[in-house]
Amino acid sequence: MTLLLRSKEFLKHQTGKHPERPDRLLALDAMLGKTDLGKKCQTAEWLEIPEKDLAELHSPKQVEQIKQLSAHGGGRADPDTVVCPDSYVVAKIAAGACIAAVDLVLQGKHANALCLVRPPGHHATAGVSMGFCLFNNVALAARRAIKQHRLNRVAILDWDVHHGNGTQDIFYSDPAVFFLSLHRFGDGFYPGTGAASETGQGKGLGATLNLPIRYGTAPKDIRSQWEKGLDMVRQFRPELLLISAGFDADRRDPIGDLGLGPEDFFHFSKTAIALAKDQCQGKIITCLEGGYHLDALAEGMQKHLENLVRE
Image (tube, rainbow, N blue to C red; front, side, top):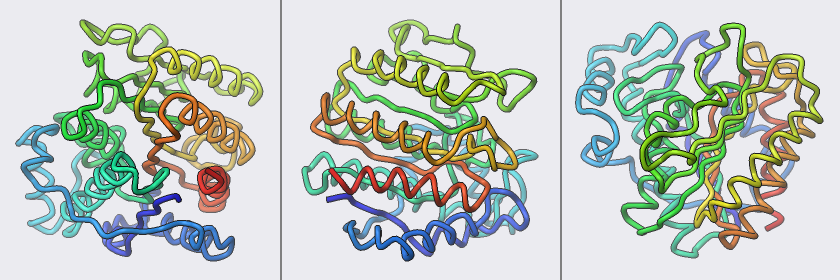
């Protein structure tokens, strides 16, 4: 059965009129109530990530920056990234949810997991919080699987409209993590990384696959690129699949807009789940990233969760 992790604590990351705001999770709560999908999932209690575990991935300076910003009434980690008095604790709760999901799925207690967390994480590097992200939830989850559960091969699929530069940076030299990112690229689109030529370095060479998409590309061609990317992931033979799920490539999104719709996220989801069933007994954990049009976010996530609960 699908594990669904969500908490009212995530609403305490107060960002004002910022696009990454608590209303995003309220829209998802409404979708879960309207569709009864929440009743088809199980939940669990979890703890916030200990600071010492956070500091194994993120630099002490970065962790201390967010801690001190919160302690002193909030501010900004960078021009785009809001920190409020509760943000440090909330970010640790979000990371804790994602590593708890890894533990519970790999222990065989749940078929798969969906973590409806905020703040998001995939732009946060090992040393810098940026792009609405404080700590890298999916990277911490991958590290948990490798260090605590002794996995040798973990794949991260990122379909957020923005390149997961933080996740790429963290694992760029790591052969144990295959990172696939499909994202909008070109014309100065944030964050400006994620060219097809970025394929890893050192022992990690070949374990990064970027699928940069130009604005105006037809959805059917985007889906084709995604499927080719999954073929490369299949060759990696992952023991666990992690998804950074952003829904800001939807045509209605005020920030992203890659011309996609809920049916395209259904396709991304269905094909990723099929790959997980083929390669790792369906072990798949999803971490929420972006998506700033509330209806588009809810509809895209609904498609993904419908696929998850069928497994």
